[in-house]
Image (cartoon, rainbow, N blue to C red; front, side, top):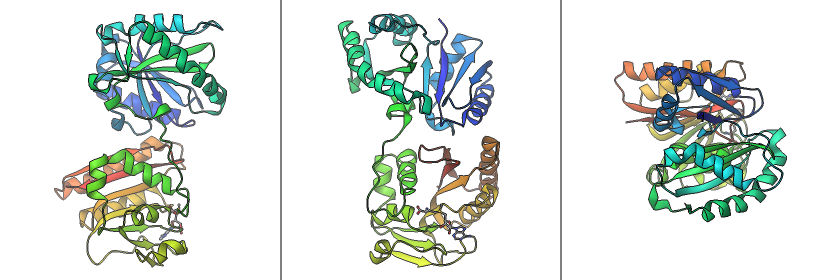
Length: 362
Ligand SMILES: C[S@@+](CC[C@H](N)C(=O)[O-])C[C@H]1O[C@@H](n2cnc3c(N)ncnc32)[C@H](O)[C@@H]1O
């Protein structure tokens, strides 16, 4: 029995995901190797020592890694599954691999029968949906209780690559993505002027928990939105009754401006500074990442905003290296000034060739 770590990522980002995983793993002194095939939307880490893999998995939080959407402790790949009655061999394989980890407990938080987020797996997803109910029945028949949220139970994932092959995996819900396939299904609000509104909505959901959102995104606050046109990000503040200073030479959607909550200034986002500090600075300007990092660091060092969300656009090949450089730069600038802060970065589902960064000054 070989257990590995399986990481979901956006298709096309396997190399960056692999480079980040290897850096994390070697930082923990664990030896092993990563398997990453282009456009398969996942990478697998295999450790030389099985106990190391389990302790890595115990430590790892989804927020520790930028290019990762989901983390599973997983079996080796099961191939040649029968056309019919797959539930029985899969249940057997699940118990063989994981009864030790479950410590004899027959509670599971949930069952996700999933496919990867890449074109070649689209058809598999239809099969996954049909397979959920028979697999649930098989688990229940064998005494498993599923969905008892009080038990701090692990969640079972079966990840099909096609009808005949799959990985079986487990995750601890608190350390993993709560979303099916690691993808938040957000509904586009019809009043929002652009689809990028979903990026900021996902960022709020990712970096702030429910009570933090209530406390730190509320009526009477002020935000600056650099590169705001046509107003998708501005909309996220306006819908929460937050006043927005929107900086962009482009036009803002007029229904947003008519709310009276938006002051639109046709100025250069790199030169604009507010008269007094604001609660939020967000920035979606398309620019070199290093230039954005410098701008954000300057705002932060001068404490012109308390909390920040910004995008780093990544058209270059070595995306992970570029992001690290920007985050290190901001970290060093703030450390030099003795400012304490939280800084996190994530390749969100709604991000394409970019990542989203969250910074909060304490
Ligand atoms: C990706 S779009 C922003 C979309 C916006 N966040 C939304 O949700 O609708 C980037 C915007 O940055 C603006 N921009 C680029 N450079 C700028 C600068 N130096 N100052 C102000 N705006 C800038 C562009 O005009 C463009 O409207």
